[in-house]
Length: 147
Image 1 (tube, rainbow, N blue to C red):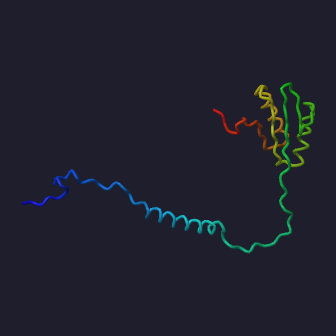
Image 2 (image 1 turned 120 degrees about the horizontal axis):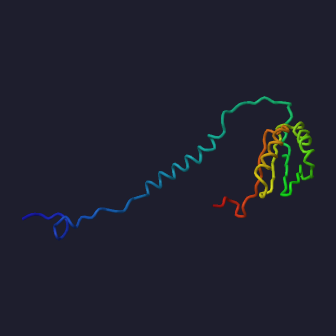
Image 3 (image 1 turned 180 degrees about the vertical axis):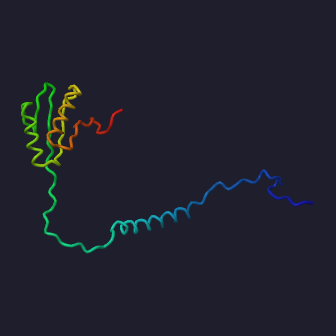
């Protein structure tokens, strides 16, 4: 007489593994870690406490408005929304650059213009004393990049 282990049939076919995972301890550990990081995060951003000296210097001035140069499809030049003859553009740009050489210069050009005309204009602006020259473009209607 033998003793059967398993089920009524006595075979190994009746054994099935437990497929449920107990996640309660995992949730408990994650909540404790969340609380620790919520308390510790503000303490890490404070930095080293230092008693800073007082100063009588003037506050830093915000940068001036950028210089915007516009080139229309028919070749007209505009400096700060005011039409400028092509032969006077360089001297007006030099005067603006002399006031503040760190001032930004933006180029607005019609999309139908020749690439060479836009690059020529950017070169003239750079030779006038502006070290930061950027091109302006419009965002698509959706606000993001289109494929």
